[in-house]
Length: 295
Ligand SMILES: NC(=O)c1ccc[n+]([C@@H]2O[C@H](COP(=O)([O-])OP(=O)(O)OC[C@H]3O[C@@H](n4cnc5c(N)ncnc54)[C@H](OP(=O)(O)O)[C@@H]3O)[C@@H](O)[C@H]2O)c1
Image 1 (cartoon, rainbow, N blue to C red):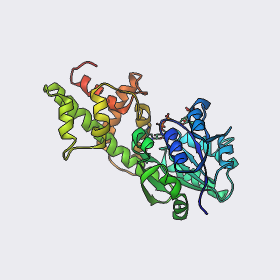
Image 2: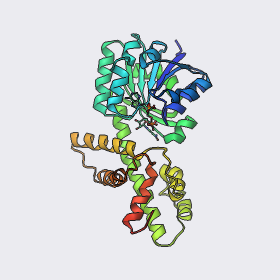
Image 3: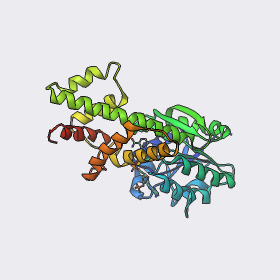
Image 4: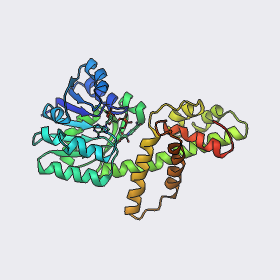
């Protein structure tokens, strides 16, 4: 039977627009957010509000979450008033947060005991992709649960790939952060050299971005970076959270990731300066100062 009722827990930069797109796709959507003010725009669009993740799950066939890190997923899924308390057997839970693959496997195993299917389905595409409904979604879990939940995933994203059993979606997301982090460093170094050598960085990005070195980072974050617009799409603090997850997985699997370790150390400069809330494009400032420039 087609899924009609979808719940959403965690209406932040990503979750807010993802929930709005589920409404646009025609689902009946019930929402909850820890800070209630973030529920208001969704209620205005026609969502129903709930008092806890358990209430969201009780009202929904499929519940989606997009919260910050592993302990937050454990809290909203398994904690008091959590999704497991309200979800019936046969329902499904899709977690779109970026968390540890090991924790994703543990939560899936705990929910399976109660007859609830879980998919780990982290996303890529930033605030821009969340609003446009064009996210790339990498999904781990049982193939049958993936097939059943596909219409919900299609309401939030465009490229949706089932990549393996529970935890695999998170592993692929960590691979995404390796490539994304190094692309950010490439952008920051290219801007740094253009500035130091007296070339307009906007002209440089216009042509470099159209050639073989082009990237999502250059296209979407390049203009913000050179304009000094450091409002977050994706916050430095969240990137560091992800890079810590990457380096932990690398340690566990004996995978050398020298470039990623360097990117993480450069972001640590911004964190030490109290700029964890800036967007990741602020990496250009670190490179600028390494080159003797001022902010
Ligand atoms: N922003 C991006 O470009 C991007 C791209 C891909 C993936 N992601 C991933 O998506 C996830 C969300 O990122 P975001 O940018 O949307 O962050 P955000 O704007 O900070 O939103 C985080 C959301 O999680 C909620 N939350 C956190 N801890 C919680 C807890 N213990 N219990 C209940 N709710 C909790 C927050 O509630 P409050 O409102 O009460 O704080 C908020 O709704 C992260 O895992 C991030 O790594 C982000």
